[in-house]
Amino acid sequence: MPFLPTDSVALSSGIQMPVIANGSWAPPTGNARAEVKDWTLTALKAGYRHIDTALGYGTEKSVGLAVKESGLKREDVFITTKLPYTDHSRVQDSFNESLTNLGVDYIDLYLVHWPQCVDLEADGTIKVTSGLTFVEVWAEIEKIYEGKKAKAVGVSNFSIKNLEILLKSAKVVPAVNQVELHPYLAQNELRQYCKDKGIVIEAYTPSGYSKVRNDPVIDKIAQKHKVTPNQIILAWHLFRETVIVPKSANEERQRENLNLLVLSDEEVEQIDALDRGERICNKPNEHGLVWGWTMEQLGW
Ligand SMILES: NC(=O)c1ccc[n+]([C@@H]2O[C@H](COP(=O)([O-])OP(=O)(O)OC[C@H]3O[C@@H](n4cnc5c(N)ncnc54)[C@H](OP(=O)(O)O)[C@@H]3O)[C@@H](O)[C@H]2O)c1
Image (cartoon, rainbow, N blue to C red; front, side):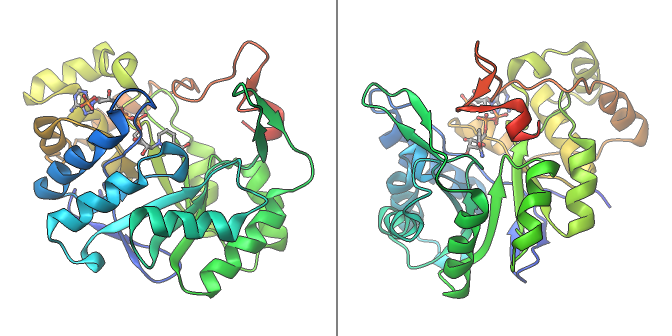
């Protein structure tokens, strides 16, 4: 059954997660991160009940302020945040920092942002640290879950290869795996694997940006229905029962991204055929590395 925009999905921990979150990444320039408060507030007013942030985005404080100003009860807003790859050796402290930034006493979903553990040099260069594995990090995450300060715990950017390693020793199966996923990167194998393991897959960069929005197949379907290409792409995700994290800082587009039709089987098949395994958001740099790890290490 296709998801409807107002649906929630049950996580293995027993809680319900709204299937559409508004993202909150913003660049570290000017006032951009502080402005997240205003557009998270418009998102909450438009009806979003799930906000995705991360300690690494520097937007947790803005999200926390928006939730407070919205007047909504804490339990009515689902908050996802993430452990940065620079904090793998201080998981408990990093988690507490997120609670303080957000001004809350629990997190709905806490994710390990990346499998790799890195240090940042003074000039911002990434240096991979070999000391700590994600298996050890996950054992710390399990303690947070047992302490009930996170209602669900999960991972992000994990491949089948790394999930296999994790699941060998995990006491708690990750509830969610948040990965890049859009029509040019349909992640079909990973989706099936996660489904089989009871892990909910969640799509970041769900639109694939203007590259996918401008695809003639998407455009044609959008014109037929008199909606925007973004709405068609998001509708495709919901048809495939994928939780999505679109981001818009614009009130009109935020509303647009909640107003999604149900596509036909034929339209979905046409969009399925666009898959070409292309990463658009997090792709390897000139040395073949994504935040310090090779594609082989990432299992991508
Ligand atoms: N786990 C991870 O490693 C990871 C990585 C990347 C992202 N994320 C999360 O996922 C969120 C979304 O990711 P993303 O920003 O890469 O993906 P996205 O939602 O696919 O793309 C956002 C871009 O699309 C534009 N947009 C949004 N709605 C639109 C519409 N209806 N029509 C036309 N353009 C539209 C936005 O501009 P406007 O804002 O101006 O509308 C923005 O430029 C992030 O904010 C973050 O929370 C997680």
